[in-house]
Image (cartoon, rainbow, N blue to C red; front, side):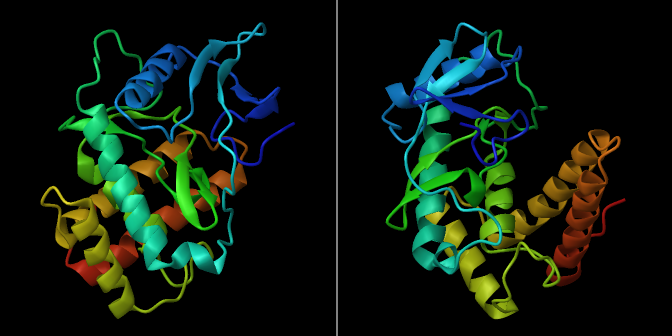
Length: 245
């Protein structure tokens, strides 16, 4: 069965496990997942190598993976704080990962404090009865600063989007400011809203460039890149972040 979403490589459910095209980064990601699970992170997939066709294989995490337009329950404070707590735990567990000979699909970012998921957003979260129980699609993980992941989570779940962005929700600037502070307080490690806002702008321009590089013959991807840059400008206009050069 072809799974909805599936990151950049597509994914299929076969015999109770998720299979996707493997790449040179796959052994590193399998090792990372094993590292996380060995440190008590039981809500990431169980890695199990490659199948007979050479596809990457991990366990299937049952539950609901929300898709856009996101259902109303995703915008609850409970989901926001649950996601921030899970991200903090993932980062803590990843800090001791042995990076020798590691191969990453996406570029690392300095300072490499932790291993970032790099796409920690509702569409890569698994929920049961409204509770976050799993995090999937780890192919684009790579080393980076904590705030790199926190900023993308804030972008998607506060959200830090232009009100015209159909992937966001019109919940008002005051409520967004409150939710951003709540996210920072829950995640901890001294991160504050100005840091997260500045990182979100940089993250969105980086994502736009990455998307444009893959957009040959794909007008839908170009449209996504335009949207990311528009959202970055919206954040800049409201946060005092200097415009990107």
